[in-house]
Structure formats: C-alpha cells, structure tokens
Length: 361
Figure 1 (cartoon, rainbow, N blue to C red):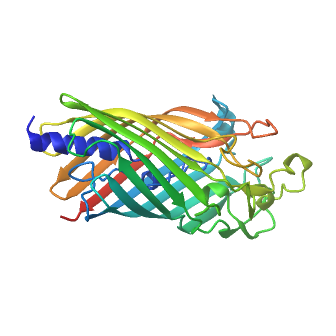
Figure 2: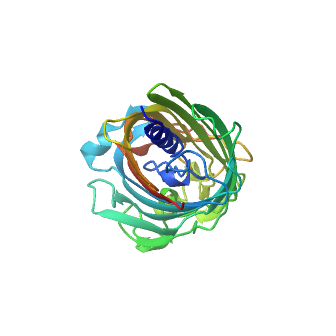
C-alpha cells in the first residue's frame, strides 16, 4: 500500500472512529441521544495542522416505532396500533482550528427537525395520530482534543478531548396537540426526545485511539456528556397528554436533563479504488439511569442500544464523504431512576449517518 493511500485509510479510520459527538448527530427513538463534541478531522489525515481550519457537515436520520420494555419487544403495541412513531432528522455544522499540531479546537452547532406521535384517543379504538413537531437550533459545543504522541507517528496514537455544551437550544418548544383522550387541543411542550435543547450546561469528555495493523487500521472511541442540572422547567409529555394528575407520575411532571454516552470499536481497510475505504464497527449508545454529577429526577427514558455499523468513506484532496448505516442488534429500555418503575420506549431498526468535510489548505 502506498504512503498516500495508507494516510488516506488512516484518515478514514480516525474520521469514523470519532463520529461520536455532535456530528454523529443524535437521537435514538424515544430515548434522547445527542452526542456532543468534535469529530476527528475528517480529511486527509487525523490531525489538524497548526493554524489551519476545516469545516464539516453531518446528517442523521432515523424512524422508530418498535416498543421495548427492558429487552423484551412489545409486539402488542404494533398489533393494537397504539405504538409511538418517533422521526429524527438532525443536522450539524462544525469548524475546527489547529492551535498546534497536537491540539485542535472545535465548535459545533446542531439543528433539530423531529416529530413524536401517538394515536389519540389510544383506547378503546386508536384514533388518528396526534403529531408533535420539535425543531430549531440545538445546543452549541466548544471542545478541544489533544494528541499525546508526535503527530508524525503514522501507526498509532491516542487523544483526550474535553469541552463544554452550552444551552443555546430551546428546551421548551411547543406544538398544538390533543390529550390522550383525543380532546382538548392546546399548545403544549413537545416530548423531550424532540426538544432542540435540554436547558443544561454540560461537560463533554472523550477518549480516542487508533492502531494500524498492516492494511487494517483498528480504532476506538468513547464520549460521555455529563449534565449536572437535575430538571428543566418544561412540563413533561405526561402533562401534555393529560396524565399529570395521576399520583403515579408525581415525580415525573417535568423533563430531566440527562447524561448521554457513546462508544465505538472497529476497523477500516482500504478498497482498490484510491481514496475509498470500508469500515465495520460495534456501536453502543445510551442514556444512563443516573447522572454522573447531580440528581436524576424528572421524566426520562433511560436505556441503551447496540449496533453493527458498516460504513464507506471517500477522500479526495481536501474533501471527504462518509456514509454509515448502524443496524440495531440490541435494545434495552431500563427502569426509571429511583422508582424502578418499568417503562417502554421505541427504537429504530437502523440509522443513516452522512458526513461531508472540507479542509482548508
């Protein structure tokens, strides 16, 4: 393999391995999943040269309508027609600047356009779907990544990233929809899985590494968003559906501000076409039951999902394109924090991830 092709493969590996953060876009059906932070520099090499800029754009799309309680599929929701449909369309624009050859700073701003719907009334016969739309600018992230080994090392390296997530997105987006009986249309806060923001300042922490083994480059990354704030001031969907008076939901009348995480481990290899490579990774993302910092009250749907993630990437000079399609193989809607009450949530069968990047020479 030529030096040029080796570097292109390495760049793709690192690009794919850090599809973690803001640009891997965000959302997992009814479980709120939005990774924050920069990607690896998705261009000719994994490092950002001192004094140079790069731009990136990413898209994530998914549709979730399959309910799970724990790891058990709730087939009756499909059979009865009472299932929720959660459609996610998320876009992200980012810019990265090389402070030094090892240290890069990234700024990322997402845009959310999503919807959540449920038949109303839900019984005895499901009625028409009451659709809630959430859209707008999301929460901005500023982060830095530092490579611990000399960037001239072309076979392996590892980096730590640290950043802050600012509550620039609207966490109280509203729409007009009816309650669970199909009556009383009014403007109310939409479900928290389609809210553009979460109203909390967050701490973004990450670890990234790669190792080239002949024609194959192995990679891994882990990103964690810690949200210290406990609850928002936004009424939860339980109030929107007219269930807020029930004593069973007394501790979940307002939305939570949850932590989120994503981990990936995989490998990439160059294909015969110059600049083109194929990757395969295992992916795990989720929302924990309890936050790392602070309390975990309010309405949340904790859970996680696992994926097998194939992908293709192409680099040409200063431009890169990658397409990944994580296929869901594991779903787990975990019990609610503190109460241990079981709940269910929808998960997608697959997710579409598209990334574009340009590096200024």
